Length: 207
Image (cartoon, rainbow, N blue to C red; front, side):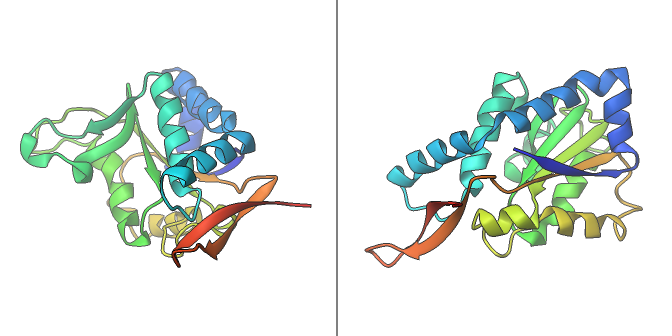
């Protein structure tokens, strides 16, 4: 997949030029670029046989999960060691060494929380940490992917994440790189009603 980036507090320059992060950032880019249209189509069709889905949101999530794990990134990494702060709310999607990664295809109402997670994982806190982050990476959908992939209309997109950075400037004290995934090159998802009157998606190729 192709993607665009937005660098907050020089995250892009840090990831590309500092030895501590170069290899990890290279892995992130390799993982994203390794996902092609054929992979998405195969996974989408597989998921669609098991349950009714209308977008490629869960499809891309699954592919990213598999490939981050293949590269030995720790999935669902807890931010804190205290068991009182467990579960999805207090968890990073992936972590490795000093980088944390969030894959954010969820509702726009949690954009601020997704941005704050790397901060919680980096700064000193009254609750003992399970991981220490220096740079956060957030992978989300561009408006183009949202439209062509038939994502839910209420999701927080790359463009919306960028708008949240200025008002949260005082709270977001760590470098954060936003990665916006672009639409598939050869197809889009068309929504239709199946025989049970449920919204479902199907692949339509460009002519």
